[in-house]
Length: 109
Image (tube, rainbow, N blue to C red; front, top):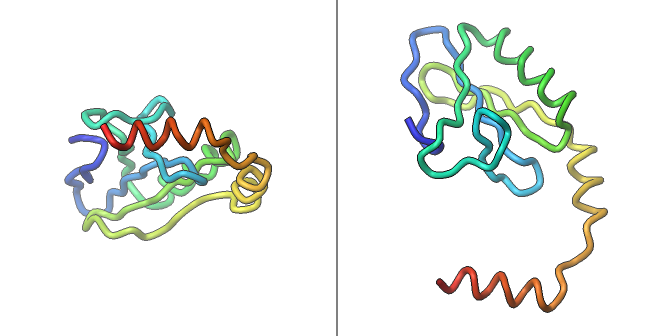
């Protein structure tokens, strides 16, 4: 399983994927940005357990989103704090010309 692959689950199980709410960057199990070969999904025995964990996670890290998938790999719920994400996105300054240039150089490689 990699950061981009949904695990195979038994009937009734759910998996949760955490992402940064304002960027959509996938987070690994320790909350850092997931590299391509890292495990990013957490597996739970039922939806209630997954939702409870997601709510606790969002309470601790309000800028995250937790996406919950069922055993058929269908997204069934997103737990987030939209007010915190919007406030954070609005508080960031627009990138300087230097940051924009560095980003273009990075993307061209």
